[in-house]
Length: 131
Image (cartoon, rainbow, N blue to C red; front, side):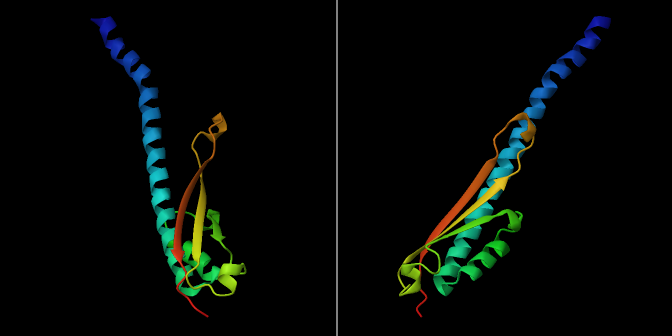
């Protein structure tokens, strides 16, 4: 009877690392999902702002405001074409504007050699603004 009491502790010690890895994986997948949703929403709002105003500064400020659960200073914004390029500089109405957002997600246990995760969100709209 005495040897059986220690068996539960040994089994728990064997299962505990697996449970911790599983919980870490669930937390990481949840964080990736939240970041993806936030970036897709912010990209859609920024593309909408760009289609109505044709102003890159307003697009960037819209991204900073709409990406709320994430750190706005770490979001990389790529606007294609930029404000000075031909389709948007001469007659922008009807041209396509793309907003691409990238966010480096901090990975737990990165010191072990896990790669850094980059989550992206994109959106495109036709420019409605006319000079």
